[in-house]
Amino acid sequence: MDGLKYRRILLKLGGESLSGNQSFGIDPKSAEGIAERVREVRDMGVDVAIVIGGGNLWRGREGLERGMDRATADYMGMLATVMNALALMDALERLGVVTRVQSAIEMRTVAEPYIRRRAIRHMEKGRVVIFGGGTGNPYFSTDTAAALRAMEMNAEVLIKATKVDGVYDCDPLQNPKAVRFDRLTFIDALNLRLEVIDSTAISLCMENKLPILVLNLWDPDALRKALLGEQVGTLVSAEN
Image 1: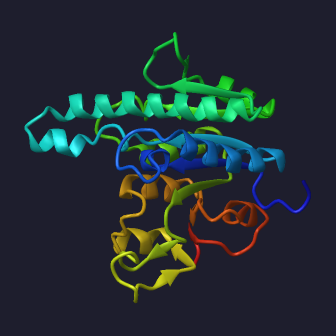
Image 2: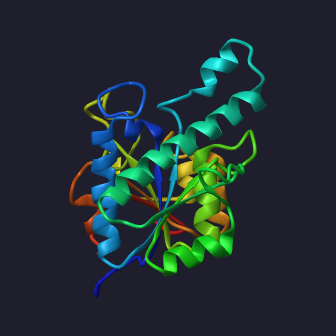
C-alpha cells in the first residue's frame, strides 16, 4: 500500500488486552477484536510481529509478595504468555490470517522454537508471527522482550498498545488534568520515569535508534492512521 510510514512493526500487547471487561482470563471476543485490527494492518501490506504479556493469567508480583522465588514466578509468567499467544493465533487464523507462534521456551508440541531467520521468513511470506515466552530468561519483562524482538526482526517501530491515547505526565484515568505528550525523547522518557514501558526496553531502543509509538489500540482508527504517518498517540524517539 502506497503512503505507508512503517512497513514492518512489532506490536506489544499487554495480557490484559485479552481479558476484556474481566480482570482475569481470556475473553474470546477481545481476542477477536485484536485479531481484526491485526488483519487490517496485514492487509495494508505491513509485516506484523507481536509480543504479548501474561498479566491476565499470572502476576508474578503477587507470588513475590508471598515469598515465591523470583525466577520461578517469572517462568510461570512466560508460560502464561504462550497461552495468550495461542489464543490470539486461533483468533487470527479463524479470520484467515496465517499465523505462527514462536516460543523462547521450547515446547515443540504447541509452538515453534524461536529462530530469528525463520521468523523473518514467515513475515516475508505475509504471515503474522507471535512471540511467546518473553526473552526466555527471568528478570526481564515482556516490554524488554518486545524491544529485543523488534530489533532482531528489523522492525521500523515498536508499537506499545495501551488503553489510553498516548503517554501522560500522570495517570489520565485518575487525574482529568493529566497532560498528554505528542513526542518525547528517550532521555525524557527515562528521566520522567513514565510507567508506560519499562526503562530497560527504552534503553535498548535508544541505543539502537528504534522509535516507540504508544497508542490506544481500541481506537478503531489509531493503528491505521499511525501506519500512514498521521499524528497518533505519543512517539518516543531520539529527537523531540
